[in-house]
Image (cartoon, rainbow, N blue to C red; front, side, top):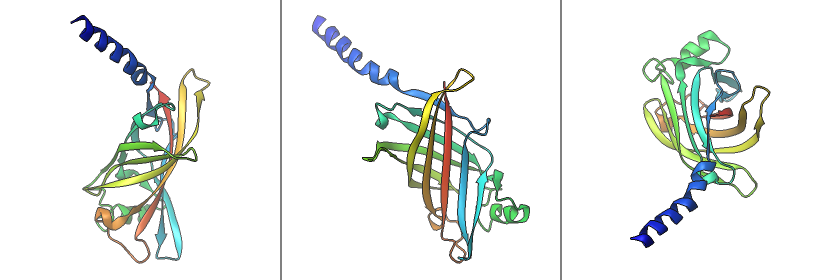
Length: 189
């Protein structure tokens, strides 16, 4: 019995530091220190750029244990903004993302790995337009540290390409994909 208790205590003391080191962050979307941006081809002649103004999320991050990191984000698709009201109305319509029916897109990471060059690969499930697909985000840490208001922050940038047909979104001309550019700054909780 004593050996079992000793083994349990030893195992707990060895695993506890790994769990304690991971820090939880809330994405600072309210302070506008984060953005979810998109770029899509317009008929193969130029590009339309825009963003989603309303989103929220959180992540766990430990630079010494990247594999324990997690990311969860929820995006209000009705907040799509390409700086042109009529175009936004069309993109949000049932012709494309159908924001009236699918007003939320979510991303939940399933695996985070460190790349040889120091970047990160974030794999996860994106639910968009009523369909869930596995995607990969190429990310880099921008920096981390204390802010002037007594908080600790960590910031990342990432990119991914979404194939519109994978989510059942109509493809028009050369617009078969959308490139996403993500800027995430989180406040440690």
